[in-house]
Image 1 (cartoon, rainbow, N blue to C red):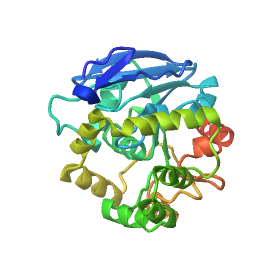
Image 2: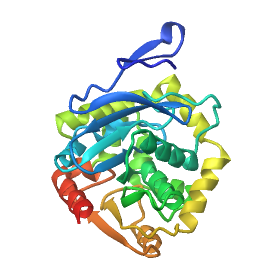
Image 3: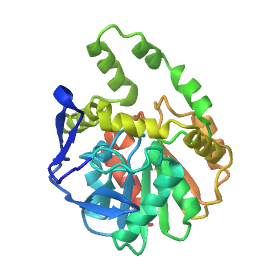
Length: 299
């Protein structure tokens, strides 16, 4: 995949299509090469660096646009696409993916950016990457934020828990794409999305079925990721830095009871629950989310 700053071509023959680069106007955009990968990186704002790790596997950094920009007043936000995701290049080895690999990529990227100290915010799968990173490199991170990550559940438990939700079952039985789409938004978001937020979430979902993304998902679908995830969730890492765990009250992916038991083993961990949010508190309640995160980071 030869991406330029304007985007990349995906697919072959009549299915070939050009996918444009992120058009969100606020950040500065560039490629940063490290660990054998050309990472797509965007930076926005001034202040102490806050590195943002998107969820997935299979989505990209645009999930944070535009709502996370509320934090740019006091923090330098660093968005990036994980290896193989959207604008970032794929590894030569199609199986070179995984939780620890993503954590080591984060360390290499922060070094390549010349950061001296930084905070980390991981969303959904990105929260697991953040936890793994903090366990591998405990002296590098000032403060850690984990948002909407189903901690305390193995892959098998997570799948069973999420499939049991009535909306998940309704999506599986949906008769039309329009019905499936409407149920999908109700499942992941507790409130109707604002037009600008909806636009970027739709762009992220449209890119999920690219040929490039299917190769990424295939790289994560082996026993290694499953074992890495289960090991992390069965035994909380010995993390002693200040950590904030954020959940939406209506997040179907989360078992709050399991999460609270798991987090109780961490020494400096706090929990915040957003009562009017589902899986994306920074979209359902953006102002309250920004106030909480900024206060935590500036404490």
